[in-house]
Length: 521
View 1: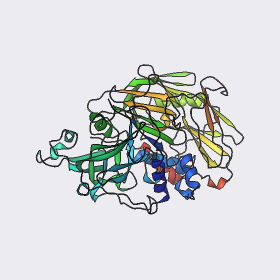
View 2: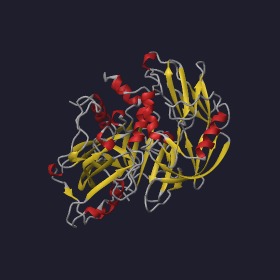
View 3: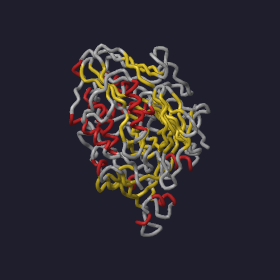
View 4: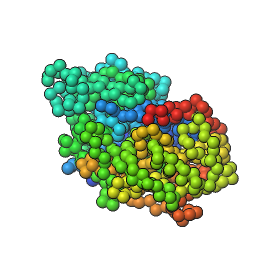
């Protein structure tokens, strides 16, 4: 019997086949914490304990636990849009340590796997003929949840990838004993002692076209038969596989493009309620903003150049590179931009800054008066190479301590090295990873509309909703008619929840998870 959470995921995936733009393969994204998922589940008596309350320590700890789990990532013309055959939704599962998961089908007969999506790594792998893998069942996964284990011998369409295969060049080919030997792989991750290893195999990945007459596509895909996992993979991080979306030719987007199934591009969109979509083959629109990727032949990644920032009316000069990583919850900036941006933000907000708290990872937090109904924030934008403006629609996290007691933090963490544009900076945007033109594109977009024709926000580009179900959500108006000054964002405070017992107090043990994420940079 499947658990309520897994059953919920299956329903969302089955219901997510929404028409997509031409020449792209799409599937919907649903955060496991999202209000839409919560409302569906509560209507079916799924226990509320599956969801940490937005704005509480548990909520942000779950996000940052994912950042810690795979911080560094791996070290080592299409006929139609496509989606996964099992549906185009993904869902956020805090109990599994990562942000977004999707169900994929492999092999003949097909088996389903719940895989974590990751733009920061390349190889797609699943647990396979396990010598050391995560358990298929665990209280951490939910009651009665059982994950599948892949075996090449159980699939009639499975083939071993030999050392003579061109895709073996990207793996540890030095371990090959002969050209006819099975191609081994070892992927090391920056997280302590976290890795996946095994052999490469080829089998069928089931996809579906997104056009007027959807068809099942059986795409032969090379992926990792993960025999040995270590570190975080033995705990709650990606226990049933990892779906790499990186730039190397071993990644699924690269393979789909090489086979002519999709253009060499994909887009990701994250909505205000935790839902969204990903489209393989999507090259964006002519009116989107763009900037070129930074080309590094030694390590291909979605890196861009930042040439400055604006905070309200302040302009900040900066020259740096940043990794655009949808798999990281928060945004990480190094000095001097971190200090200049945060100090400018502090100078322009009206609320009193709180003393730094060792249990809270964010340095700049501000108290909200119990009688306060709105927060006026300076707009934050990043200037990219070429002059395109990358808008930050939602720069803060609003924390609820208890009924009618709030504070907010500028959701940027200080990095000692790598700059990362995390998922919180992508809210309200459709991000296009155009690997053919080597450009990043973006545009304000309503990720929840069923008609996927591009549209712009007029008044409310993003909504906060960091309170218990049943209460009104906060609303953000960026540069709108209710703004108190130019280049400002207006946030309307939520009404107190009817049941204040659902609001959790901050605890040191929970926020220690957040602090650990910053130490891996």
